[in-house]
Each structure stands twice: as C-alpha cells, then as structure tokens.
Length: 244
Image (cartoon, rainbow, N blue to C red):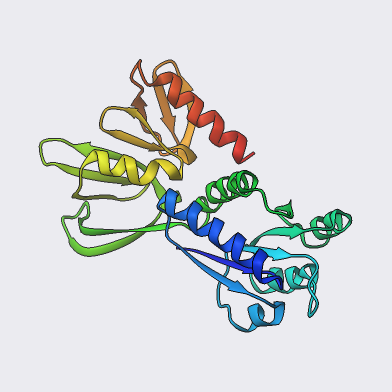
C-alpha cells in the first residue's frame, strides 16, 4: 500500500488535492492511504510511514521546505511534490530537499495526474507488494497467503490445463488459481506487459529484445507474438523513459 501525506494550511486547497488523489488512485485500482494535515507539526507528530508527500511551500507554522527536510531525514526514500502560489520559492524547494517536482496553484488536474503516474511507476520498483492467496511453491508446500514485492516477479505464465498462474521469481516459482485476464488487469498498470498469449512480463527484468524474442535477466528467453511486438516495444520504451 502506498502511504501519502498531504499538508496545506489552506482548507480548500487541502481538500482539493486530497479529492484529486482519491480519484486518481481509485481509477487506477491501486491501494493507498491518504492522510491530510493542516499543519507541518500535525503531520510530523502523526505519521509512521510516508511514500509520497505533497506539501504546500508557504505555511504559517512551519514552511514546506523545512517540513520537507524533516521528512527526508525521517523517511529517506520519500518522494516530495511541492504546491505553491509563489514560483520564486520553487527552485529553493527543489535544491534544498531534492523535491521530485512542483505544482503551481490552482492545481491542474491533468498535471497532478501526470506526476502521480510517473511516481507510481518509480515507487513500484521500490515498495509495492501484493498478496497472493492459496499458493503452492516449487516444493509443493501450500501457503494460505504469500506477500511478494512486484520488483521481484520476473513474469507470470498461465498454465492452461490446470487453470493456474505461475509466478516466476529468480529463485522460486509459485502457482495459484487465477485467470490470465485477471492477472493482466491487475498488473499492467505496474509496468507488466503481455508478450504473447498466456505470458505477462515484468518490464524491469527485460535485458533486450531481439527479433521476436525477449531476453530476461534470469537468463530466460520468451517469444513475442508478431501481433504484440510493436505494443511490447512501445511499453518497454515508455517504461525506460519514465525511469531513466
């Protein structure tokens, strides 16, 4: 689950950003917890984990730049987005706390969506996890549930005869009951792409594409169907650009 904190001492701006975020993550079907705070000190006293912080720069009690420094010290991996009505403070925020980006008020819906899209892609490399239920490992041991980091999944493969999906990691293989269509719907938004019927590849593990073959970093080679090769290459290029 992605933990998000929004801090702004203007109630209307705080409500606006929070509502936009709820809408974005609801549409993406991504689990998140969004907390809103009217002051920097309130945020600092009431958070145990933050992945994304969206902070107003100019606040009465403690400004957003100082708050950003405190949050970076407490949560080194946090991604910060600043909001402001005063462009003259933007470079100070970016240089002082290495902010990810900034948004000028009034917040433009399309711009914040673009920023969040990029951030989700970056975060999925680091923190995103998923629970899989009623799983069997390669030693035929049963688990009621296993939690896996998305970055560690190399690819999914549908086992048609058994109506199961294999989850291929570098050092383990799990199987569980699920349709391939459900897997695609669930994981495409996290930078997985279909290379051929029944296989969904984690783009983080692609080494290269040569012809109609995709080479993965676990030394696996998988075919790319002719009708999917253009889309697969585009998905990979888009992923590489977002994460360069």
